[in-house]
Length: 282
Ligand SMILES: [Zn+2]
Image (tube, rainbow, N blue to C red; front, side, top):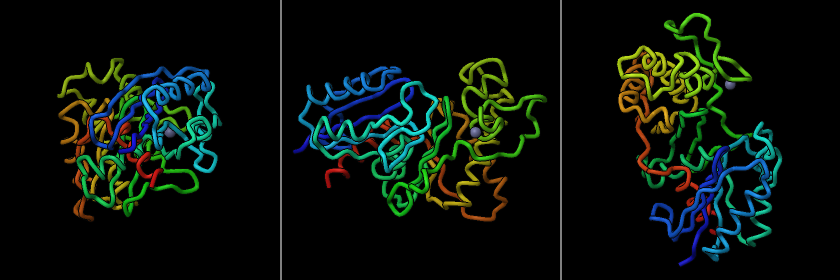
């Protein structure tokens, strides 16, 4: 049985793993800090695969924005990583096929194949945490276009209960979805992190309102069978039901709505990287 290598590349850490099958318990997992020396970080990744391999293929689910033609993280403000040829270095050093996609497309792929949307041909995965991102699977394949979907920056209408003067935290758009509903937006609005706000706090109605707007836009544009909402902010168990209820209100019965669910997988991004590795080998 071939061994696969998986990389979930994040702005603060790289999770790397070796295993025999996507969805199965990996043989080995390591956390590597994302340093501003991209080449050094990648050397650690390669050493891990050499120590635990040989791997037959590697899958990379990475933070973006991603340039698929070049296999790079393109214009990231993350120091040391802009235009870094992540895919080509892995291919050259390990001499194996490398599957390469965004972290959220990887997570969407994993949730559609093995997670809460098992068997779905169309699924959107949205992560709500330090940032907001969305990946889409349509007809069983991750959506790529000129770039790839950047659902975190969808424009949203100002919530009627939005505290006066709050302008959002997105450096590009102010109060886009990410600027209004990410973890840092919640903290900036209320002066404390989301985990410290009790379920009855007005923060959650506003949060659910913005996420429901995003889910409606996603449903109207892509018509997925399911939207999976993950990420640290969604760890609040009351939030998913509030988003579902608000989405139904906003829709006013116009379209059949997708199933909204929490991730079915513990590590959707890393599992997605394994799926990408399997596909790269085929
Ligand atoms: Zn934005």
